[in-house]
Every structure is written in structure tokens, then in C-alpha cells.
Image (cartoon, rainbow, N blue to C red; front, side, top):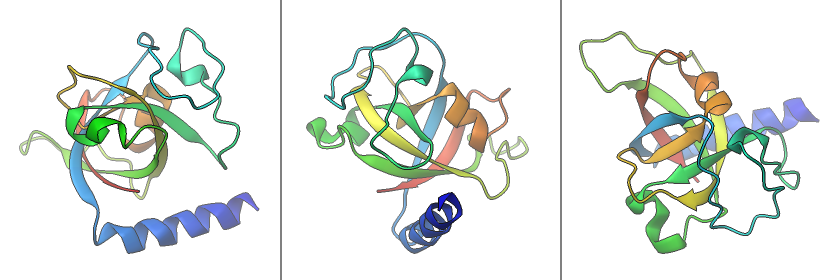
Length: 140
């Protein structure tokens, strides 16, 4: 069943890739837990511990900047995110080959310069952990 969900997600992202939105992402480690969306999570001291039990597979918590937040329209929405490269054109790509993740927006980040701040485990799934910010494509 999990392989079927992954296959469907890959197909969905492939179709959505044509209309994917370019953006940037950074890793969000321990810290901010100001939940602005009512997603039914267990409140905890780490966003990596937020349980999104109603969603299939692994979905990582994320905060959105003002543009991605879209006046709250993104609250609770799920996005497929894929690393597309380094923000520094002279650096090698930090992306892990053929990896994508699903994120769910749980909060607004008024001071974030990147489109999304993604839970550290999710970020490290698509990019090398020694990189702070990456280019991404994302689609709902």
C-alpha cells in the first residue's frame, strides 16, 4: 500500500511539475512551535514531533513565509517539495537525487526569507544536512 501511495505521489508531482512554483527552503530545527493552524496535532517542544496522523505516509511540518502563506490560505495545505539546486550558482548541487517530500503548513513565519522553513528531518531527506538554504519547486 505504501508503495502505491509513493507511486501515485511521484506521478502527481510529475504532472504538477509543469506548473510547479519555484521557491527556496531552509531547515527548521528545534524551536518555534507557534501553531496557527488547527490541524489536530499534539503540541510539543519540537516540530519534528508533530503528529499528522490523518495524512498518509511521512508528512513534514513546515512554516510558510508571507507569500507562500497567502493570507492563511496555505494553512493546513499539503505540498510536494523537491530540491532543485543551490542558491549559490558556484556551489555543487546539495540535492539528494530523485527525492521529494510532502510538507503541511502549520504556521506563518513573518520573518522567513525562504518560501518554507521545513522540519529538519524532512529537509535532510531532500538535501545535504550541511546546507542551510536550497532552491525548490513545490506544488499542491
